[in-house]
Length: 148
Image (cartoon, rainbow, N blue to C red; front, top):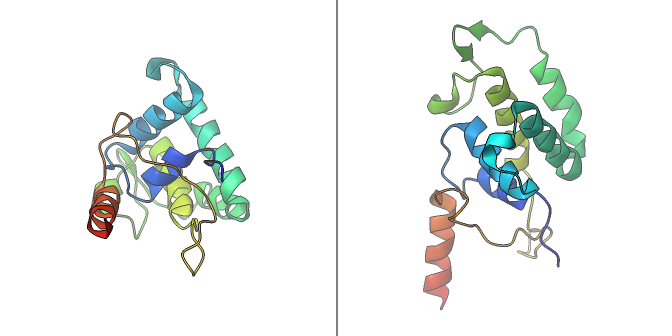
């Protein structure tokens, strides 16, 4: 099975990479995917890549994400947005950060295995050269080592 496109963004959404500044993290992932130096990856490019990932892997989520982005009931606060149910460190984000949070929340729900453990979507391997490994990647490494 071929490794899927946007695999590292999916790994990021599923906490296989450490989550820092979501905009800069996704910018780094997408710049590597696109073969660009990070300084050439503008905000609009980051957003277009994230939307393309969502279209490719979660097409049924597009309407939900777009309606949430333009929901007038979401309260704007000084310095960013508040959106309920998000982890404390992501409660205040710039508009692009908020949009990327919504995209990664949908990608996090993406199923990569069926109920029997068979691979549906091949993600390949995480790469420490992209971002530091997160808790799920570390857990996966421990499980693989104990299985040997």
